[in-house]
Length: 274
Image (cartoon, rainbow, N blue to C red; front, side, top):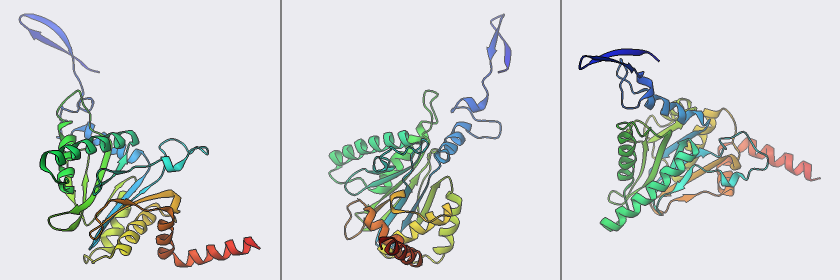
């Protein structure tokens, strides 16, 4: 680390210069906050990809059920989750560092409870997204803090408009509403898939919304997924309660996406039973 000589009050002392990438509050020469860039990288280092799709009457998010540590044969995979219920009507999918996603969900639950106590109604999805974004941006202003390595997808129903809502909030403090979105290691591949499929702004039913999200994730990962490898959260306008699909429900959607492979799998299992 370079050392500079500084003159103050007729005396000289040596001051240690700090490079721009070591402090979140210092801009680099080209106007970047490197600590925010590092937080973005941390969201991809977890090795997972998440997809969200907004339909005509529903919104769905799909994430990988994958531990951050090397695969442990004794691990109970049902305990590994990045999908959180914030309120009865709001869900959050955290892509990135698992512990920081869980901490964010805990703070979001407290914030939504305070909002309901103060105003008498549930916090709307866009207000929660803005609160998470404001929290992230404030953490770029103080040296005692650092940005969280998490991209949050918030899903819910806007009670006033009675429409499904999908928002993302990132480590830099941005928050946006989306027709569809992706985050994580292979987010670019998923976005390319979604841009082509949703180019003409199709009006997707609930079944189509879920299957579009799963298909985008399969395309990004270049593999066929199993029901045990993903977690799916949904909210519908006719039933605004946030719900996590069961493995049986996910398996039905996977069969609808890959009908030929499902038939082949059934034939193989029937032959093995003889």
